[in-house]
Length: 423
Image (cartoon, rainbow, N blue to C red; front, top):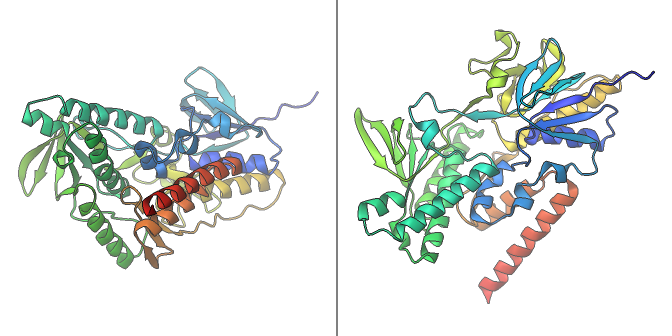
């Protein structure tokens, strides 16, 4: 009788997990591959802003896993992971199913961190997945609609105010997008766009801190971003040096210069930080192989030091050799590196160190405008920066056919827009 071969299980269908699975399948990996994620769709995180604004469709940046994996050797399981028993090589799912593996890939990503601030989890909108983008977009449209039907000036002002907590890349990109988008939506309803208010709240006085660039380039990008935020359809207001102390359904309470104050807002988005996935924090891994915040420390080969059959990458792990930002381009390259080493293991070959390179920073700074800092040397702004950003991200879309469809449809839209503007 033939012996049953345990699958290689991949937990998490983000950039690292999905690209590990696709790379293994494309290179005829000899073992069964099982990809497990709680959602049925892949969220192309860097372009969720385009999804919110309608610049791109769900087929392009929020596709179903079953469509992406069609024709591959990857089995997709939609379920939530309850626990991973590394010593016993067993995965337990919320449905009651259990899986035993020969090799495991941990790619569960990170989760939003609310830093213990009361009301933050209950009353704010996260913006990391397609599901969250849909929820935020629906809420914003409802607020705008209500604002057109109220005679109460105070209530209308609250409905038209959006507070964004956190001025990292996500907060800046979301603020810039909404400062262009919401005035358009509100004007279509007959409202006055100048009544809309976008407030970016940050604990420090510095935005885009830790962008992965050199100090000089980081300062330059900060200047570019601040200038762009001030020159959208409506100018973004800055509330810096403000530490959020509590969040209510309709206001943010904060401390600034020793004084407690509050900002009334019907929409409060939270982009202030992330933390390790709880499942990752609870793994049977020695404290010396975890960071203080619970992230896994992996070897240059992306393996766990105590469990060489387990690989980890993306937002849940840190390579002790490098200090890399938690970005899509890093997660994508780590997924490929993990797949290459799994293939090497299957063939009895020597494993290689992950070679991850940073190609620059890409920031969306409004509808049709971006900044592209390439290779920590060249900063390209405006429409050209937007073209570079979109083209770069489109090359990362999951399969060649999907990539082709997304690229051609986007380019056609761009060409039509250019000619219609020139007419």
